[in-house]
Length: 117
Image (cartoon, rainbow, N blue to C red; front, top):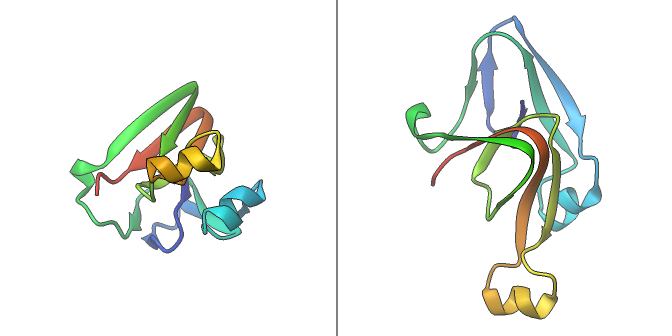
């Protein structure tokens, strides 16, 4: 799982940690998400800093689908998903009128773990 910046605290020795680069600049520049994230693989426990208890986290399964998330509610996602930051509407005027602007977009097959805060 790729985890959002600053959330990793600790993990068991059986969990591997690697750094993954963003595959596109939209997520790094437009979304202010940075150029790199940590990615956890293997089996075992990992401790992440989160604003809500584990029981309240929402897991969204995607099967060749698209999930658009307003804000940084996604705390982790499958490395198989393509992550981009896009305008919430097709035009700048529409984005300004809706008050939204940019959304985080996850495409493909995998899962996204979200904090409902």
